[in-house]
Length: 638
Image 1 (cartoon, rainbow, N blue to C red):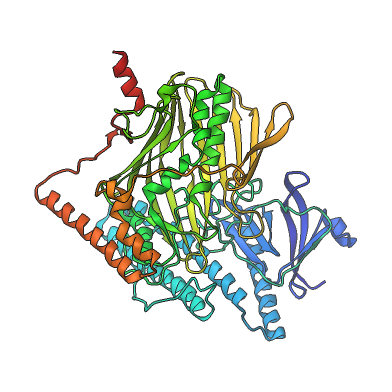
Image 2: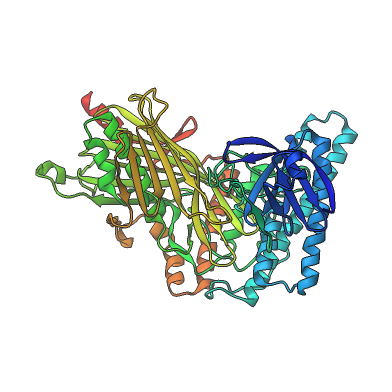
């Protein structure tokens, strides 16, 4: 065998769930990395397995100087050398072998790039860009720690140069995708307009991109680590974005594959914005600037505030929380309502973006529950958020309480069931080449007033994928629900789709009793489909089927009865023109709203006035409704 290198390495195996000693032989001519259980077995030709290196990708991690990975044929193999020097020798030899056989294949076959090859290279560029952006953040730490003025200036110059390079790469990725869509439009979704010459800058959200390889094969006789994840595996700048060997393939979004608002991701744009932002405090405006300056027919035709109302599209599930007699049952019902709350906001498979609310915008609606035998339930709540709704209704109000940063607050209650909900969400958007991520910062609180229980919950992040072709939305991240009084809690994970294989929209959840480390209920399924529960008793049962439970239509006042700053009244001209497919007129109407808002902001600045919210007030880090049911009932008792 014409080998150029041989020696011991440790290899991660699924069978032992750990590192196993193996003797490796690299055959330069054959493009094979063979391994044996020992050197003696190698001498006898008893090969345990081999990895074909054509088209493979090497990955390293500068936080661990002895490990590396080989990604090939949609699988990732993990190896461990004795030390950094030993790893460097193996990587150098492997890269030479991979390069030779990859180029040889292209020469032999008269390789002609296809659209699929283009997509793979574009995904690879996207992954490199993410790593470069992550590295760019380290400059700020270096500048902060640097005490010498001369050294600080050098680092700042290097940072500026790197920022310019990042801008150029982002621009290239967008232009390449636009060029592809121009040649081969998908379902007529993307019709480009003349381009400007700049593109937004933002610290990108982690992408689901991994580096695909073509024509590579793996042959072996022992079990491969097939359950290992396919993260972005890239040898670049001494940093590998690869997961640890025992991680799962589709974990929480923030640290893993892809960071969403409850599915209000954007639509395909047809122009590149004129402004760039690079400072850390402005980065979350970039995605918003990008998709708001890129008006397209694919609008949701409703404000984000109205989209938040869809959390209560199943009002019966919400009020049934208060009907449960046992704290355990109440926690289970909170989880059931929470998991049912996201699908209603996503109408259709193509992502559509809601209007970005303007400062002071409000939205009011309610849902009528089935009539009860108590005649008092049909009485209106004169001191409630919606005086025209009854005691047996679920009333909802929302307000855009801040524009920079963009924060929405919303509140819901049902007087007859003595239950209320208060929440605020800061949508922090980030843009990267082919994806937009929205990090939802904030929390909600379900309050069962009869039991004095408060359930604190967080929200998943949202991702807009394929924003320049046919966009689609997924949720990702780990969320928690907890009740300090009862001690019950729940952990919920919205899994993002891996680059290769895997299902979209997966969720897993665990519900825990007080002080228990083992859950009494495990849930899995799809947040916009069917979810099943496995109970500690061993029973498996349907938990919720979002495709079969009916959505209750919200009731909104007629336009002529609305206040001028209510969502539908504010956006009526934009909505009308979008329905007529008059994009220019819709853009002009949107522009008028923005100009009014800017003029009001200038006036407040000149008069040194602060904006005063209409329905909510800031309490610490939260935004709280001014007249919640809890406060009104307490005042009645006194």
